[in-house]
Length: 513
View 1 (cartoon, rainbow, N blue to C red):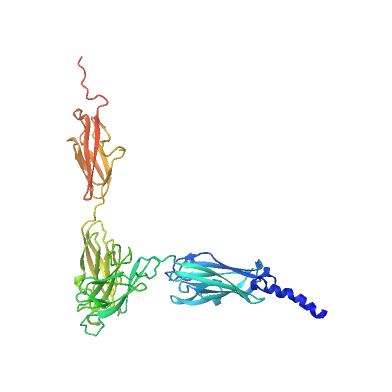
View 2: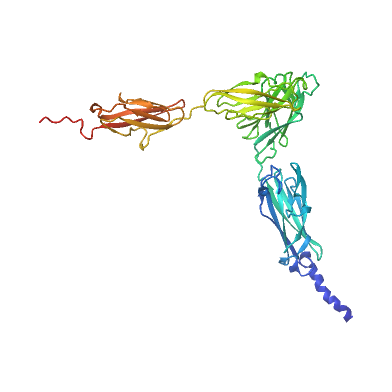
């Protein structure tokens, strides 16, 4: 019996240790495993450009490094070349992915780049890492959807296969705003047939408009209408209609978006040309039912054709002369005739400042030119078959820019603008000249109460006054007058005083005695 009891005495402490500490790993309780997962960044931007590591630009703003540290009884767990740590994304897969970034070929993928294929680090939902001094590191790179990416890493104690875990969360995009920043347009076809077209081309199309916030995320609708669609009157708008929610309208309609998308249909009328749509959202509160306080507007062009390749591609003469009001919003959809839609517009010319031409043939913007006049723009249009037409458009900008207000100050005047300001005096026998200055456009100067011998001789931003001939003894005196600088925007007047002096006594009559 004594021999049989000896092994039991030795084994008992091991069994007690294995069960101690609430079910810890084998061995003494102070050798229990632990794991900690930390991230270098708790938030990264939304990766709107889908930037990949090592390809397509600087990816570091979109990356957070995660660090694992595992200990056994306060000391690093033993080194293990492979599989010590298992990590995976438990939520937020659409917002981020895991990357090794260790340079190993098995962790890269081939992607096309121009005419060749290059290798870039691959993205993973879960990864396995070895242990070096009880630690390892890997990376999260954000994707194009805002959200929280939660990662869980685990380590297994080989002594009893007990698993220990820790989690870390990286926020992608921060807080998502509730107001619109952009509205974009997508349709199912490149062109529509007119209502009575000759080739049975569909004359209606389903259109989607996407409203996104400052994080480039689809906006959340409050349930009220938050997208306004309007047909802009032009040659192709006659008879065209908008359709949504069982309603039909030939002018404009308001709809509610779902997950940032507003869906409606457009039906062409009997006319061909460029059907122009205006999409409007309200930046102020994403709600159109209480009015539009801060509109964000996007234009969309849908070509409407009577037939396919019925005539050679051309730009009609009616498009080659347009009149534009300076400093006023302008929008015009260019028309191409013949050819095969869709059409691609371009120019190598410089449009008047403030105007631009997009590839859909839309000239838009607010002209801002100092001098009205004619601007020549060479237009190029290419159709789906590669045919090219070229014409010269003359844009005539009329009207002047509004004048900037006049700001008139006199150097050295520190007192109240209601009190006369002393300016330079002059000695008898010399000519008087003085220059005032002002900022603003098209400034003119005028004097009131000035002596007859003093005139304005220079206009513009500097107003110069002069006497012309030398002053005589009859002119010796102290003078007060009003000086006015003005333009179309406003007028500023200051009262000034100056003296004609005789300090040498040239005007004193000698005493005959």
